[in-house]
Image (spheres, rainbow, N blue to C red):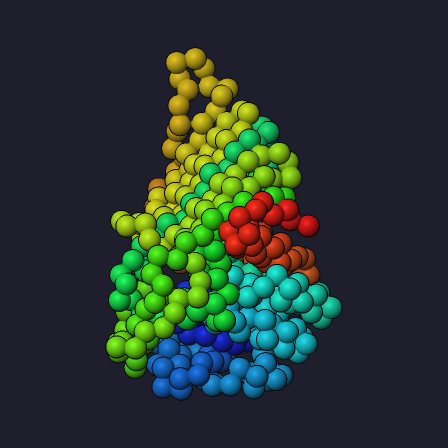
Length: 385
């Protein structure tokens, strides 16, 4: 099998999820290329070496620019905080590397557009990892909508609820700093909801929003020990939180449907509640990531006395991706979405076709997210150009 050398930049939460997919995708899918875990890159040499040893990366590097300059690297996997996505992607495109990038795409829509233009000009495959598109149940919902089973769409109701920032003593990590993260719940989790809404319902043309920052200052981290969702060591010094903790948006889609979005890290009892409802003239679907193998479906065409939401267990070989996994009713999990993404990404490189979501999707999604922040600041509805 032909090989493609992968370099991953970033080694924390997403670095692990991506590494697992690069490492194991050939065991389950017939891929056109075997990905070789060539280089892992991170600023902390000791930490990135430990990461590389655990996940099977052949080499390490602490300077991402040196990684991109290497002639033996075919794919750049960007798993860093958002502030680095833009410079790394531009350099990777200029060097002719295919790009697999985590969300949110960048700090601004302007950066996202330049990333898209650079990748297109270079002729490289570019992918933005909104992984929830590739849940089989979500792909089944897309298939049903495209086949007209819901008819004309009237409503989208989406929310992404977490609670990991409710403790006021949780440290001021990069997620809470605008110059590194770009935004808070808007980019961190609402970006997923917006991407799913665009994927399933269509483009959005107007946005009205409210935001809130419930904890204004937090302890400054000291030393190590913290993870993405866990506190590390802190001192007495506090710093200002410069992003929103929560955002609520109402939107109008170009096709006339109405939508609502809620994203927060202050929903007590909710750890990773990614949920949506879509209502049409002929039927409706409901998805809940906490039950990610299931799709709730209502059909207006059922007989009288038989109408009601039914549960479709999206684990049948006829459902997207599932023929490559286990027998029916043997559930898959969060990590499998990343395998699906890597599989589709390698196929796109082989065929030369476009993969979605890509940097253009990231740009269009970022325009919606920016419109939400602008609406909250101005207390006015914002039209999407």
